[in-house]
Length: 236
Image 1 (cartoon, rainbow, N blue to C red):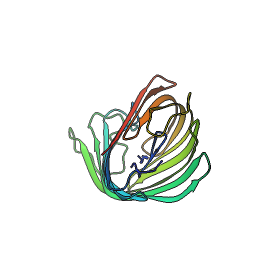
Image 2 (image 1 turned 45 degrees about the horizontal axis):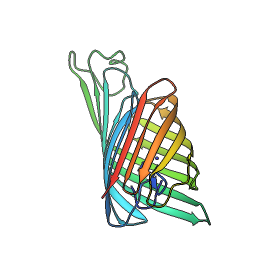
Image 3 (image 1 turned 120 degrees about the horizontal axis):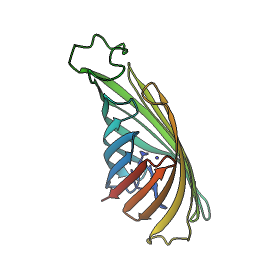
Image 4 (image 1 turned 90 degrees about the vertical axis):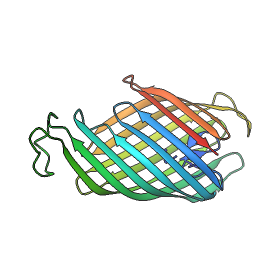
């Protein structure tokens, strides 16, 4: 997951003027966001911000942490809000919150290692078990940045009757140079994410290189285990 006129992030995904993913950006703007984390998740969002403090949109999330033979997809509607902003002489801090609802689809292949261990009803022999549910989503982000230092903490939870999935992320970033308002900003970011719930339990530490210029935000890197990550956000 961070804001100004963008929409993360989300998130968170969440975005800010220095190059962070935030749920709101510019008034009357449309934001497209794609997030890929190997063996963890894939997510795409499209959102519209009628004001600089509020946005809403659609998202599609795929969770990969349940292991081979499992497909978990969530389609959702989400509302994002800038709850509080502090403007300092040479820094800014924000609090973002979001909530939404949608549909979750869990597919368990008949050859999955734990196909018979789920309490979702009988598994038809030789067939996949498919479970559709109504799902909810809540989250928030606190961030602080100057033109050289960035810090944020974001939390995002997906839940339904049969599953819970939570992602807590702490990020610390440093810019090798002070960027101008409309210039290219570059950030070196250390990101630590804890996945919890009954879908995935893991902790990942990532090293990321982030670029941001006005309406485009790109981030690439990998975990300390060598698993690639990439995020792209475009605002129109």
